[in-house]
Image (cartoon, rainbow, N blue to C red):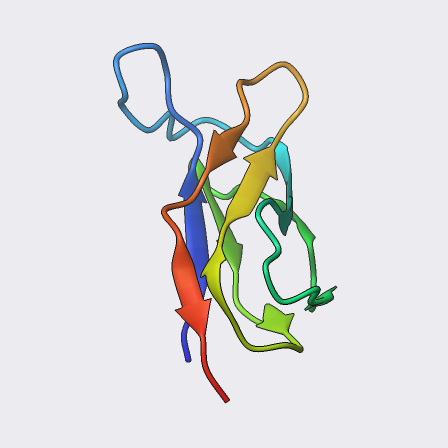
Length: 84
């Protein structure tokens, strides 16, 4: 268990510590047909959006998550697996 943190970064890849953007997270690749649970929209604090209670309800290999925020380029996580 653990959380997912998304940094709001500038064009050089540096976290914008002034950012207070609303960030939405969703399933990208969904090999198990899962539903994403928990708070899927959070506000960044000091440039970091922290998702602390996300869940997936189906096992599968190769899931990804996609983070989006208005005016910013979406970002996709590395693939990960969910086991029972």
